[in-house]
Image 1: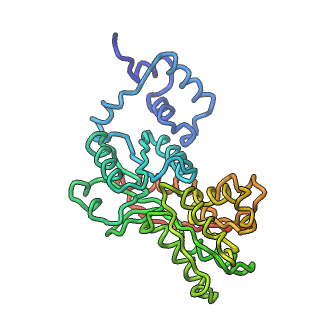
Image 2: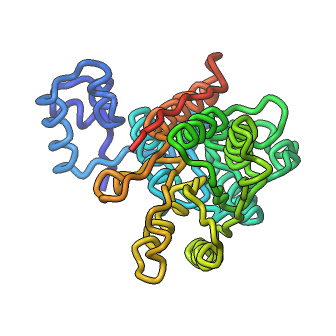
Image 3: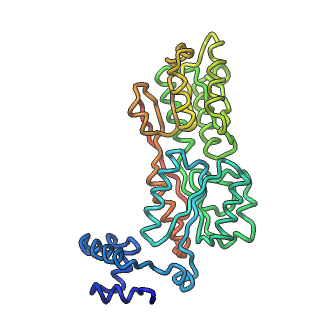
Length: 334
């Protein structure tokens, strides 16, 4: 049976191949094609079982039309929302998104990059990297691969990135807690500690405590293993119960730690700790639904996804534009 061609669709529908191609690639709205026309085209394509020949297209253009996205934990709402935002942008330009989780494992991140490059031939990669060393991404075999970092920066020359102002957001939420009478503020920092986001947030915590004259007396940083968050948080709670002066606030450096804190705070055995103020770098929908007010730093998640996707597409296309961006956060003072 002869393979259905775009020319066949054009002839049957009476629309140009260009218009049909725009609709197929999700560019109908961008080029002002009416919803009625788009619906007619898509319905007809569905009935005719037409599928664009991506392989032929890749041979013609030298592109795979695949983009890789590697995050630390896709189950985290922060990353799943970013992935959704990225996919919306790249799919509108005819690209497919391949999403994988590194689970904060440096070896797995390297394997995923190698797989995406060698087996899938991706046109570019967006990475929330766990690596503490730039040598892997500076290797000659990756020299021609467009790579863009999100959320975290790996120290390297000429890196492309979209991140948020972690230090500024951390300093702001800490100053808010101190201004509202909190002084015994313990910081719960999730591992790996070397990641740029955690380092910057820790610096915000330390500077705020030092400027308020609280650093020497009250400053405490608890490392929470990302593989055992609930267990480590509970150990800290048990430790607090033994203290005469328990913390009056806990600053969690990510939403997973904050969720574990809230879960334990509601248990009877930790009733004495129920009045500890919880603050979190990151904001999740649940914070608007629970009675316990959680002070948080909101990150522009959709903007991170959109900016990183558009930036990578520009790099792939050879368009000379902005190749790094630092976005602001917003304090939500509950």
